[in-house]
Image (cartoon, rainbow, N blue to C red; front, side, top):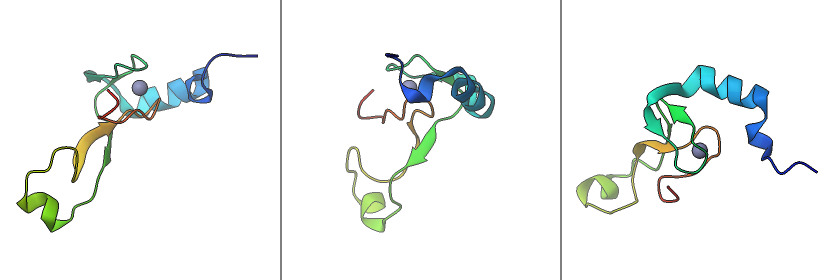
Length: 73
Ligand SMILES: [Zn+2]
């Protein structure tokens, strides 16, 4: 039985590395180095009017390899 996650096989790492790989961000969970991360959140006006921590649209939030969010990291 393999202890690796399904998202960390070599073909998935290569595919994600070609699309997101770079040196700008490093994921603390899996060590993946990325030039951009997956955006998440909602663009609702209430999040833009009020400063709410952890809510609203965030550009670089989810690791493309292990799917760890900015809150997890
Ligand atoms: Zn990661």
